[in-house]
View (tube, rainbow, N blue to C red):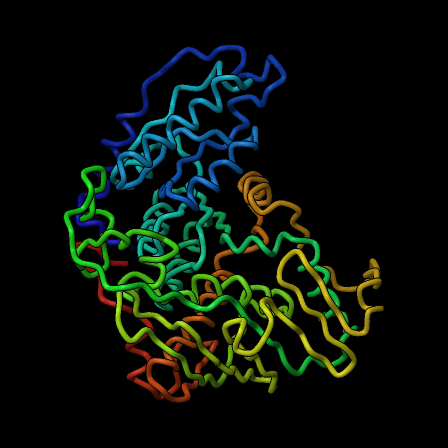
Length: 437
């Protein structure tokens, strides 16, 4: 259970009471004007409404089956802007008759404490994912959480346990699973059209360097103490909270681009191989790190995984030496996907029609829509928590091997390194008080 350093029961009762104000239900709320009845809508809140959170909001708002009533962000201007966007969207929609407005919060615990919120979208910086997710799950919420799933292996394991213990629906934001060509690539692999697959080559863009910056006071609209949260406190600098050039490449908060982007293609690898719950046996690799500056995660890397059946997964940044995406290589052919595009050899593989009696992968036509559908049906979505954890773990194991500068051996069943105390200590990180998982 997440230790939130508060009287949890008292907090939840207080928060629920604050939003349990009765109101009259107009006809629009019952679907009288052709809209979706209020009783059929999934009431949502969003935690983290910066660049990625805003992008998710824009796409979620297109679904009449969802209704956003709350947003949370330590940036006052971002949460106010997101709330205005939501209210403007609903102002001219069929839902307007029942819509009571969008509340804004600085503390995510107030949002998840709302009894009227069914589902939560998490798009906060990576070091917050696990705490916010486990807390929301314990509060009875279903979750859509951005990737990578967590910063550490232990956090991901805690998230998996929480989802199953509380029987919640959890969709990881590895959205490429919902792209038709990705599904076809996996079906070619699993139905033997490539023969025996012996190698998978995976590549994503490399990390980023950034110059050294002098510490400055945080802007008045940012609650920096809350933004840092469970991570070690470090001084604020002009680009510290920037996703693409700052925190995403700072080991204080994440693992780096090796996980932040790489998790997409590691996920496609496992999806194609049919091994969400499998893992490598041996991992080794090298990397180049920034020599100075704001960032301290790998700029480039070259890693090799050896699976239990001897299959090799070779993972690097895309100019070192593989093209971006995932290439499955078998003794009868190969197929390469980077999401929307599909290449193969021989070319005839691209014309294959998977037969009804052959293996078919989970057919999700829209990643967000799939999540909302599963909230209703209570079945697992296309990228359940275990899939997000498996892909994130592959990236984290690579980082451990790189930083230790030696081969590590991983036991996928035990979820730990074999006879390696030094590596196992890197499965978790200490969190700044009062935060724990």
